[in-house]
Length: 396
Image 1 (cartoon, one colour):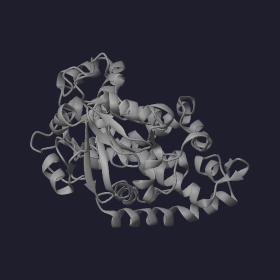
Image 2 (cartoon, rainbow, N blue to C red):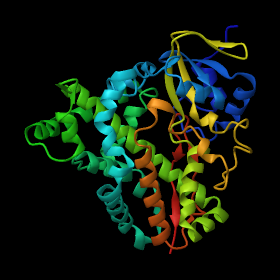
Image 3 (cartoon, rainbow, N blue to C red):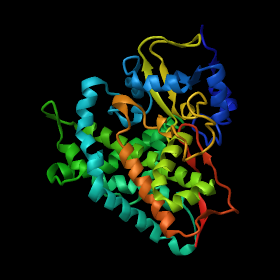
Image 4 (tube, one colour):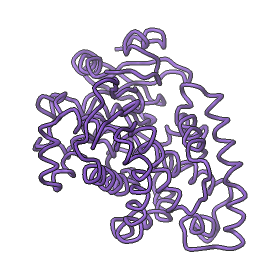
């Protein structure tokens, strides 16, 4: 019951691009895989991995850490981020996660963090509001969440565009390993002197919390702190940057639903949830199989990487009726698995929602008659990560 392999070259034909290329629409391929091959073997620079595409199987994998071990992340993004909570299990995971969880709880996000998100949002809108046109990716979404995350962490970043590029190179290590490792070194070089400052003169920010945190009576090593930062800064910023852009794109390309949100802002939360389902910012997550896993006679062997396709699961017709349709009134839209399940549920999910809600609402308030520029093409692209490549708009 072995599974024929799809090489990187064949995957190019399968998806219309390489693993990290700006693929415009992978969903027809996912639909075929869900019907014909719910587990398919892929060969790439990290050897063989097995793509899991159906909702029930992806959800089971996210929930079952005993069979689908998170230590599989050590063989992927962990190569450049270092050892992080993404690959930790059991009590080790809980002890390290507890260090940062309070800073990302709903209670913590109310008050000063929300005010910081609002300040950052209006600061960026101020720069282009009078122009009557803008690229909301280049001029807003690209650096917006990174600015917020840097403020929460207490990290002074002088060039957000450069840091954002490091973040992109870091999480795109599968596409270009050389750039990924170089970005990891650049981020460490930037952060190390700031860590030293906080070690000698702690403040109330999250960076100081990390520098002086203790696990089982011992402070985190410098490498452990840097691994946290390599995770929290790029991962948190990149996910929200993509979510915010996709919410705007979804509403601007579905005018009737945009008009409903303009009339009733409580529907914005529905739009965010439906966007998370319709265009999940992060499309894959990795797990290591602790024993053989079989679906309909197709087998992924013990010890191999299972690539859980979040993007495919959220478009599974077995779970969501007419799944390719964007519908803020969809009854079960919150069943999406964009933030995962279980003990590894996304730490920054509350912050992502807060940022997207405040940012989109502010644009709808301040940019009257907001619409896509009909003379410039834009679309949502990507395979491992998806969002608009640009968002040219007119307003006023």
